[in-house]
Image (tube, rainbow, N blue to C red; front, side, top):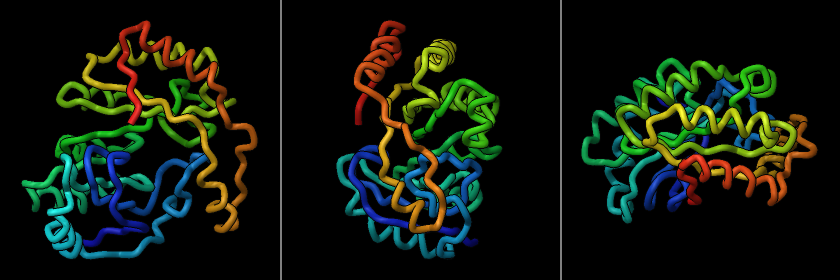
Length: 235
């Protein structure tokens, strides 16, 4: 079986616990204008045989210290669900993590097989989410509800000015989190421009001109969540 990857390498603690071998899979079903990896939006990565990746993971196992393992991210990794699951099913003694937008039909199929599940929950307002990213809120929230019934999830909010840092978004996030069972934590990721140069090098227009969020807004979000007994962490 084939798998398309545009970047791979080790990273410590930011893509799941411990030291992890991180595979960035090509292709995404969203078009977030602040994306740090715009080169992963299409499927133009390098094609590998899954057997090759399995061998690479096995040989890298001594590097999986401090609870580390393998992370599949993107792009949107669950668009290549069959390849991921073939790899996972071949390596039962390895810790696996996915980083996903939870907006694909196969999200649950992959997430159920992983030890760590990280999801970017970008907006609780459907019209805004659809207009800016192309995402489907109903699919995302349903997938989060389903996976949270069986395992802990780490939910990240990329906080972007003029997109999701307003009071309406804060109330929506809080309402949704309160509807869950509590088997999750939340991390706020304030806007940055790490991807701007990549967009320009690809000949694409970078359209976010006022994305930075002030400290007072971040504090307001954290305080609101904690007031509602929503666990907020920083990795």
